[in-house]
Image 1 (cartoon, protein in one colour):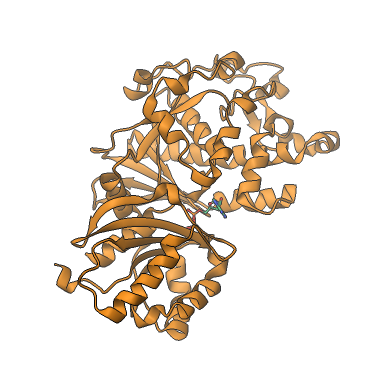
Image 2 (cartoon, rainbow, N blue to C red; image 1 turned 30 degrees about the horizontal axis):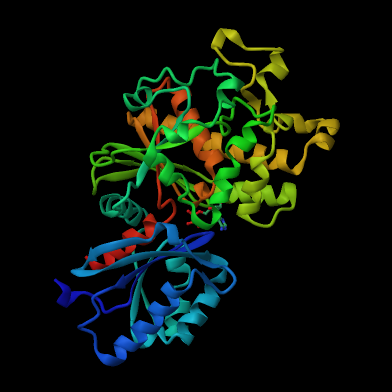
Length: 430
Ligand code: ADP
């Protein structure tokens, strides 16, 4: 009951290796509050919901806002905010300036940073961190947001020239190795096929131009690789996630965790890999001199990994027919880079694309093995690596379908990297 709930403001914080994610519940029914409390609440609220950017690096993902929510008996809206974890000191300073600790004596937190920064919060702003396990929070957050998002949270990627039913019933004839470039370059008519998909496809808000630029424009590139399938005419289709069990969660953050989920409370961590989003960004910065994730993805969107990777046809002169390996599959990631001439020919864009494809396919491949071992068919990909990164989503969608002969289904969630923070807040208010 609301009597025993912690006092407002209500934040859920997920302090990750790269990004800190904040979920803020903005109450719309503020009658009960005392005056002083009300005033501080108002200041915090005005600051958070009156802005979309905080300092140089904090950002509110306005397109993910969830209005009309009831949490802990209170009615309000959920806001989603992120900033780089290396800016934590600036955040703590802000909490000081905004007089946060006069209002709250505790805040709930998850992720490794909840441990790493616990002392700083305690000593500098007199805030106690209530710590929760990040994987518990992740599962709880997925469950909560899927149930409470009034528009559709879960979706998959379908490609023009294939029918939804192929993908939906799990026996796809869609992704045959014979898919040609003309399939990829077909006119962009499919967006009209599904009205909901159209309305959702711009969901990346301020950065939605990113996903657009990965579309038709890139498919005109004659070198657009059919093995990557990050190119061409794909569209989003809502997926009914009400009875999802069992499913695999592949959380692609700085590193990767893979969980097998059998019920809202029964899950286990089955695998992981250190080759994750941090690896992509780190390698991309090294190889191209880029500075940000957005820049890295932008570079990749116009690059050609075939200039960097060795393909089956580079080795066989064509397909490796006996085992049904098409000539344009990557045989050796970065395999061309042993040649000085190839190194000189490869552009920053090509290197960025090759890095993205390498990391993404490796994760897809580990996910497939986990799915096979766990005998699970639905694979949900989350984490901020997928932010403004339609190339990787389509690549994962293609790879899961193709290599499993249509048995596995790659699913995606709109709130990508925010489930830990959301789950943390829910745990706190329980
Ligand atoms: P973590 O909890 O480990 O910080 P996230 O789920 O937040 O994990 O994902 C972090 C990854 O997301 C980064 O390694 C990078 O690949 C990607 N990413 C997306 N947007 C950004 C951004 N604005 N800044 C840095 N990394 C980003």
